[in-house]
Length: 284
Length: 181
Image (cartoon, rainbow over all chains, first blue to last red; front, side, top):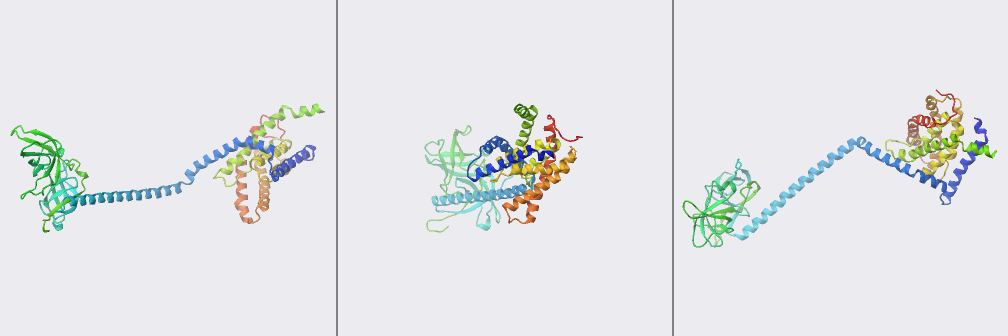
């Protein structure tokens, strides 16, 4: 206790008052105290490190302290993401539908005499080499047996089986399919048939090619039409991919690659059924 | 006489004290002004300098504590003080105040823990006065529960380990503390 009555304590008190007063007065007059400035500079790295460590610690603690809040936010963001995904999916569907309608209009403009009924593929033949499709339209919608079915790319096949509100389509690659066709370059007539071997590759065979001229690779093949044909004239089927000579008959045989990809049949969703042909007088 | 004074000022023991206490002040002052105010789990900033001064008072002497109080107050004012630099006087007054208690106590952690109570009381009163001077509109209840109690709690909790730190730092010195267990 004697220290507080000593001269050293008085000196300490005076120094403390001076150290308190001088910086206060200098600050009041807008100046900067040199000693304080030096102390501040010396302490700066420590102060910065202290703040940095505290912030890092806060970040670490926040993970645990705000766990419920973060969890709720995470769930909310997940729900939002799910909603956005659904929205995008719906928009994608609308885009596809829009494209489909555009194609429908284009096809209708190209062949104005044809009457179309749109349909959607609802089932495919169970098996790895599916070439039979089930559509969502049937007799209730005016669909009849043997009506041609096509997409904007080309001919698919014909309605082979019919129900009240469904129908089954046999594609042109099936061995039971036989269509009168012609090539666009030399107008050579022939018969396009499904082939048991080529079916799995999504190809058809054009036989009985008659007339003068040659069938060349790349020639386009169209339906020939005719009184007894299921198909109207001028529907695109595909292009010639190879030309061979039949070893048995010695006749020219062409392999046709349909415009519709029958290997990737899953990609076909919307199709059109030719439900009638409008005559020049306006009747069906 | 001049030679005696020079010898006294530059004796190795004094230099050792100055260096050790300066480093301790630098670290604790920086922590008090930067680490704890930024720490989100800490509801109030603890007064570590008071804890350090209490430890020095118990382990060393008031002759060491008084200049240290001035230096620490000045340093705190420099790095985190307001417009009025009052901390050198404040801490010197604290040393004077706590010396009434320390002279009757033994140098031990138990003494340190007991003396934290008058330390906290001193801190609480000073905070109360500061709030009254700077923000007279704050209700008393809000002062007590919003500021003073959290500050007392944090200071009490975080100053307890300071005894060991001060003891460790003063180990190389020839301290003149009272009876030590």
